[in-house]
Image 1 (cartoon, rainbow, N blue to C red):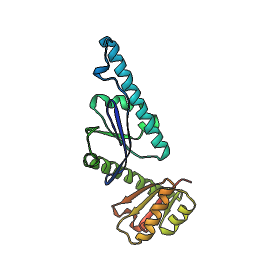
Image 2 (image 1 turned 90 degrees about the vertical axis):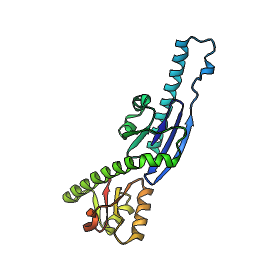
Image 3 (image 1 turned 135 degrees about the horizontal axis):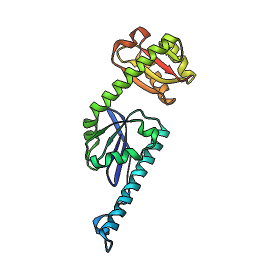
Image 4 (image 1 turned 30 degrees about the vertical axis):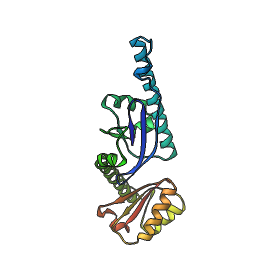
Length: 212
């Protein structure tokens, strides 16, 4: 998630229940006291150049975050007049993850404020992703390719570092194994999603989409 205005950016990562602000930064933008003897037009061009540089810097930081650890879904909180400008600056890899916009005070919102506003959007997006992954899981299992179901097959795939997405049923027994599987999946940069529906019950409560 990114909170961006004309001079400040804040980057947050996590889930609806566990958002963490991983970094924030500001860029120098001319203020009214800097106008001096400049003409209004020249001064305004300078301000817009500074803002443009700030938005490009923000886009570069988001790309580095994506490259360091891929995220699925990006929410953007920015003044309405800036939203399209921010989106245009994003690298295509990052822009493809943009799923919506939020109205927040970029500078003064607390983490709890952000979580409160973003929670529904994050949960809706995650629910849509889980439905897509479950559909893909059923298709792959039907074809007998690049999927694992049940503790034994998932454990083997994790050992071989083949897991791209791990899905597990929170209601199923075997929490010790699930915790180990989640930890192992995260270590290999896999997606991890708890599933609230009974879809995984017949599969032993845990399944995975495999990279190869």
